[in-house]
Each structure stands twice: as C-alpha cells, then as structure tokens.
Length: 284
Length: 284
Image 1 (cartoon, chains in turn cyan, red):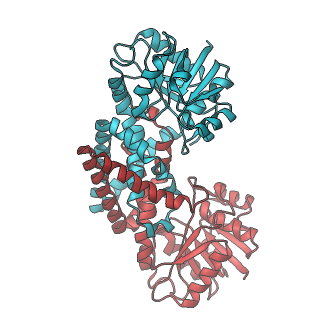
Image 2 (cartoon, helix red, strand yellow; image 1 turned 90 degrees about the vertical axis):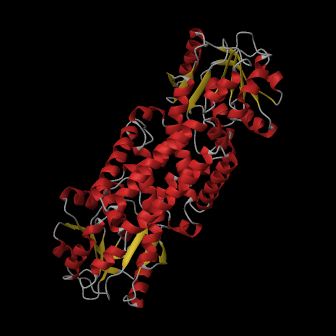
Image 3 (cartoon, chains in turn orange, blue; image 1 turned 90 degrees about the horizontal axis):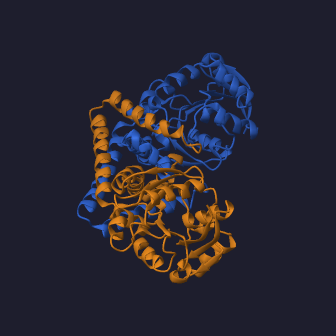
C-alpha cells in the first residue's frame, strides 16, 4: 500500500533513514519531516529524506495517515498526542523509541489504543544525525512491534506490513518482554562500555589497541539520550547489570584462585555466544 | 641498516605482517619463516611474507642477525633459546608477546642479556593467521620496548631503531610497567567482552545490535591464547578487573538509588575518555 502522507517527527539517523527508504521504495506520496532545527531539516531535504520540512508539528502532521515519532523517548507521547489531533482519524501512530513500557504507560488516555502501537527498529550506527542516514539502514533489520492487550489485531497487522514493506524483519513482543530483552542486548552493553572507558586512566590511553577501541565504541554515545533510556528502562537495566556483575565476580574468583581451567571455560563460553551471533551477521 | 637474515618464529598475523613490512621496505636480505604447519608456511611464502620456510628452528635461525619470536607467550623463551644457539653471536633476540614480566623472568640464565630485549607491538586485528597479514599493520602502531636493568643501552637503541624503521612508534617501559598498562588497556577489555557475551542468554541474541556486536567482538578470540596471557599476567589482570568491578558497583548503586544525575555523570566520564582516544585514532 502507498501512504498518502507520512509524518516523521525527529529527522535524525533513524527518521532520515526511514524517509529515504519510503522515497526509494515509493511507499509514500509525501514525506513530511518535523524538527526543531531548520538547518538539520534542510539537510534532510537536500538528502531527499523528506519532501516537506516544518518546525510546526500541527502543520506537519495535518492529514497524515502514518506518523512516526523518532524523537528522544521522553518526548514521544507528547509529540504523538499533538500530531494525532490533526492527523487523519484512522492514522497509525508509532514511534521508534528504544524503551517501550514507559512510553505505553504514558500513552494511556492520551493516544487512542486503536491507533497507537509501539515499534523499535534494532538498527543504528555509531553516528547520529540525518547526514548519516541511509535508505538501506532498515534492510534486514529486526523491528520489534509491541502491541498491548488493548491493541486491535488489525493495527498490529498493518504495522507489521509497514515494516516488512520497508525491508525489515518483524517480531511481536509485549512491552515488558521488549524492555527486558533490550536491557540485556542493548542497554547493558552501553553501561559496560561506559564503565570500561571510564575505568581507564588517561595516562593509559596511549596503550589501547583495537580491542579497547571496539569494546568502548558505544561509550561515545550521547549521555543525555542514554540517561533517558536508562531512566525509562530502570528496573530491567539494573537487573541486567547485576547479572553481569555476578559473572565478573566469577571471573575475579577464578583469577584469585589461579583456576585457569575455569578462566578458559569462561573464555570458551563467551566465544561460543559471540560466534553464534557473528555467523548470523554479515558485518561480523 | 639492512639485516642479513631475519628469522620469524611463528608466521601468523603479526609475524606475517612483520615479514611483509621487512620485504616491502627492503630492510632484510632474507626473511626466514619458522613454523609447525607447512600449509601455513606455504601461505606465508605465497603472500611474500617470507623468502624461506622451515619447520626446523635450528635450520631457520642459523646465522640470523635478528630473531623475532611471534609464538604464543609460553613458547617464546624456549624458541629463542634454541634459535640463539645457532644465530650470529651478536644477533638481536626479541619477541612480540603481549605480556613481558613472565617472559623476562623465564629468560634469566637462558637468553643472554646482551642480546635479548622484549618488544610488544600494540597492533592486531580480529582475525588471526598469515592470510590476514598486511605490510602496513605496524605503520604508526605503538611498540613498547621493555629493557631491564641488565639490558645494554646499545641493545635498546638498536631495537628502537628497528621498530622505527618498520614505521612504528616506540616507547620504553619496564616489564612491570608494561604488564600493568596492558592489563588495563588490553587484558581487561578481553575479560569484559567475554563476560558480556557470556551473560547474554541465547534466546536474547536475536535482539542484539551493532553496540553489542562491537562490545563483544574480541570475545571471539582464541580462548587458549587468552588463557595463557591471563595466566602470565595474572596479578595485574586481576587488579584491573577488580577496579572495573568497583565502577560497575558504582553504576549499580546509582541505578538502585534512582540517581540519574549520577548515571549521566558516569556516562559523561566514559564518553570523555572514549572521545579523547577517538580523536587520536583515525579508525575511530
């Protein structure tokens, strides 16, 4: 199906990539980008990620039949509530936030259950901003869709078809399942990378190699964004970090006891898990 | 200066890259590769990393004026002792092992202090084996040289000139300083990456993204090699892991207390450290 007017609120890496894919695949007659920075919207226009740019959400969302909020997680419900007031009555409202329970709690009474459903494309890069957007970012990426018990099946089906038309794979989880999974697969690595970078004294930085560089890469992410994510997904993130600390303690005990058979079996276990994923990711 | 005959014991990623650089820069009249696997030596020959291949260390090291052991750390002293017995009397003996104190302890009484000096090029990649060797691997890489109080200054100077002629930067540390630095900059990231991969349940692997992939990349390394490294550098590695566990505990407390200002300042500290290095590494 072809959308009449898709409104993307927040045209950064993910919003811009969604726009580029919509245009490339001719899935939308018009893509409207809503943002606060005119210069960034200009970049999005120049890159062909959007057809129309505005800093007025009411103007941008008017008569839209699909609205995708790509803002930081704490602004999503507000943005969608404003947009919904001027969009088509049956418009789909979704977001790409990387936590889901808190957004869905915030949506109760503010966004119609017949229109709002959460999405989370597990795609991204080290660099944010529309200048790094690419129309292929979502190709083959997994999008988690998070209906609640109030979500009509038809809305879930339409949302699934949308992301599949974008070239993505989809998976349905409850908001709670989503948040617990992402705490482990995404939020924990961010905390660990940050702790690893943070524990390295500055006079030791001259000795770091490719291993340290890879392992700490995501520590360079935006602290304000990640504070929000960890605030929104507080309990699952804490639990994931506690589980990780327990494994670190096992490591410490093995080293204290000079039990290098145990060290080797820990290394083997880590390698087995890593190798299982590497074989699925072409990028290795 | 041009070396008459350089003997590389263990022609893998690093040994092969050293051979390729020696040839490309015309720094050696002959490069001999010593290994246990004829098929891997054949690959090294085909790639032009060595001129001559042998599985006989006595034949390979005969009359060499520079011998570089690129074997796993626990074989280095044995290999160099055999090689020294047939090399030129004034030959330089070195190694590229990633721990230094235990090698140097093992070298006492077995390798002449006038000839042996430790080296550690901080260079490498995710893939081992001579098939991934490149002649530019050492370009701009830091090589730590680890003389002891028994090492003649002239030997340190000659070793420094060698690595600089290979295009590397050099730095002099005591073996103890080296091992403490590498425990933090290299061995800790390996343990952390392994623990992070190992703590991820297999049914969660479908949700991992680029962040998890980067942060766990080195968990795919060879467990036997890393067991050896951690065994050799036991105490500094344990101390580095304990310091890391303390930061994780700080993170856990901040999350337990819901103190997100503290979380944000931890994220800021990690980012500041990571950004300080990224600006120095072109590969970011």
